[in-house]
Image 1 (spheres, rainbow, N blue to C red):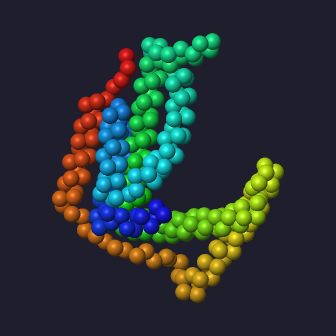
Image 2 (image 1 turned 90 degrees about the horizontal axis):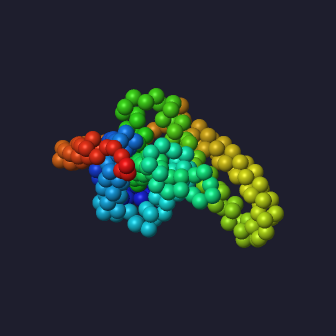
Image 3 (image 1 turned 90 degrees about the vertical axis):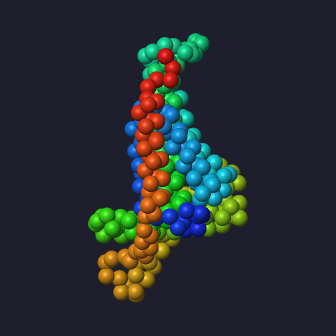
Length: 255
């Protein structure tokens, strides 16, 4: 569904190189920011671009963000208690654990970086089809072997998902996940059948490529759209503003 949306979103007509530049530059600014304000600014602004300009469904976008944020929260809980220097803010009764100012600052900074970086990555994934990304890599001089390998891997991801979904639905209709022991057996059968089905799909793909006179290079449908100078100016102003905020707001939140 995400790849389908990338083909039909509201920013489809924008230059893919400009979108890729904006997303990658935002990720670099987020991970290098000394304070949490700039990553949060990137997260909010790019989320607005995804929801308003690209017209992505807000509920689906929130579900996408919950996945990386949940992992980040679990890591941050550990960081809160292992960073022991600074003023003690919270102590755990009966345990030698405490939340210090340095630990809280580091936890907030990491959460902001993860949130901003993931919003930047989602901006690329939800507005730029992978075929255009491969075309940009080809124009940048990336070896053809690596691009072809990435295209095949990307193709087989969808084959894997489709085959797994069909096998899982067949098992559910036959009550294969009714009890724990049956669930374990069904999962093992799913893994084995999935391996065989994907192997057969790979062989069928090779035969289809040979039947079409495959010469060792996969064709990439190029759709070169020129970069609009007003859009480039807006992107440069935005990145400059984020960089200025990052330099001005670095430092601790709690003393």
